[in-house]
Length: 202
Image (cartoon, helix red, strand yellow):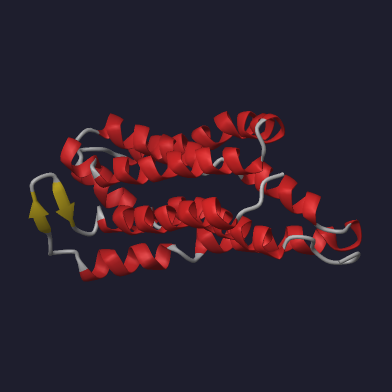
């Protein structure tokens, strides 16, 4: 409409991408320090892990912004979301690898995969009327905060319910450290499916 939004489906898909992107940080918060500690790390190592996520995001944000102009929103968002999917699988293997350097790398990959905030905001600005644009930008900001601040509850549930439990079969380990990664990988896979089938390129 003249005062509303021109692509409600695209807006919903973008909200999902934003939610998942910040969920990739929030869901690991409750178990990140215990995992760092188990791998022999210190508070300094934890700082490196947290910084690696942000660094990955900073590194690719301008690149994804340029790609969205050159290749379009769909290809850019799909590329980033596929990277995020791989990053969740890397996180799931951090305990098996057993090295802090690998964990820092996996956190950086999560940051890279979620570095699409600029792209999603540009998309929302493009599909909304100027009169109400700030309202919709505020909505996606709320979604971002929700992914970052609310999803640690999920990690906390895994941490409390699986603290002394583990299922192991070969390289597959399912415990309080890996459960958030595997859950997130399923959510990201679903996001990729939705992106491919319901998002209209521009």
